[in-house]
Image: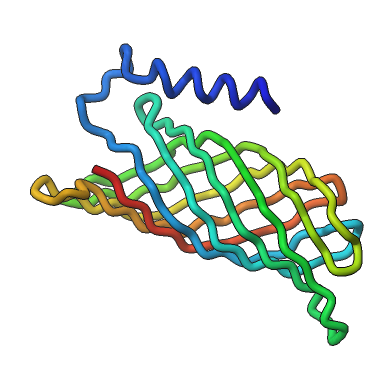
Length: 179
């Protein structure tokens, strides 16, 4: 995991050396609300999360990103057993299709990566979970040259999430800004 993060940091550091990008693609800062299902100790739990993300272009159609999510866990039964988690992820995303218009770009990206979750559950206690994911993003970028935020992005994200106890799914709606 440390090696993967070191490679991502190195890619971000040298991204503008010769990648063919003009002085333009901004680093994006954003938020996301998401919901899904995740197995923890072989129990399927509902998840609701609020995330913060940082996205940086590293080459034409490639972005490196990092995310932090605060996650609420719920078993969905009447026992009031619940938990929370902190999840940190890093990954790469690649644009597979896009359409540019006057001040807007629509796109479809694939993304993949990994990270770590620290889960604190009312029954299971605290445990760490290595986490992997692969997913699909679709969204719109709106460009404005005369604004302090040159770009505003909205996106829909759907991901398969892999933890030691199995796999789950999450879907979320996010917004990002950049200058």
